[in-house]
Image (cartoon, rainbow, N blue to C red; front, side):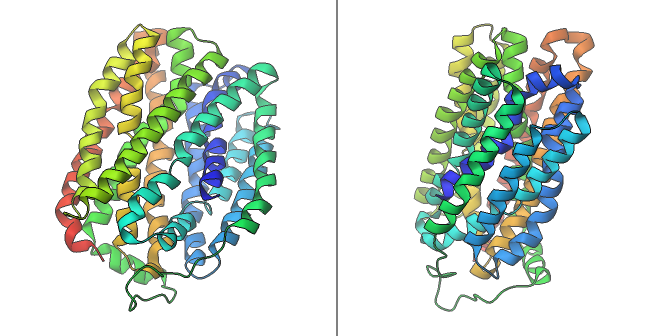
Length: 403
């Protein structure tokens, strides 16, 4: 059920990527406006409200919070289908971010209370299957509905489906005892925000992992949003063809990479906590040559095979890093620490990544014409170099920061 709700989280978050093509044509938007609507509009309240909602989750019923969040973000997704101009769509996407602010950090804390320490990287990796499944479904469903009917119907349909799921989730998912798999002496009383921050300020690895993940997310979220448009512009695919093509890449590559990262972290993490950072760092570096080959290839078949690999490697970090974040603080601080991590990751990753690639594409139009997005993606791979560097620095501190 947690995976299913997270899947809807990403359907509603990423459906705008495939719908960017008809939205741009219908509302007359620029790539910069599309990037702001797809990134900053969502990230603004998603990041700002995530921390106070997580603090409530550290004190109260987490499943109830996720249920309410699901209803809000689904309703606002449906409202997106009623927008008549850029600002109306921007405000509706703000509303989606308001709802989704309560969906993820409480779920991380729930998973940590459902599974013992040596299984958490895989468990959080399995939970993170919602990222590729939801992104793929959002792109495919959006492409199919937009092609058969229109982009407005796509927003309304997935929004209503999420609202119908909410009561089922609330009935099925039970609230587990907080910290039940941790040391008996573990503190389970609610922590104040100042306490959490004072603890985290002494954990250098937390900040390295947070800013490293945000650098990788600038490329990751940017690719999720812009690759469908890239296939339409640079390879001449129809909207429906691009949705099926990219959706398949996301589903296969994304699930393989997430499970690989969680499995390797649980296996090697027992030898040393540094592997929770080292494994993603190696994966980030490995994405670059494959992205270069995929984006520059003129063959769709070759591009498909090459895109699978960096899509997988780019998501290897989820299981290891999310597990590490749960372990650098005691149980009664986990939702709040997760929200602080998500604040950094999403404000930079979603808020800047999509807009940065869009602005870069606009700037390169004069030189590269219809292929401007191709070169914007190539330059964007530098974000993975930054991410790998920060993760390598974090690996040196992770052992002493582990609770």
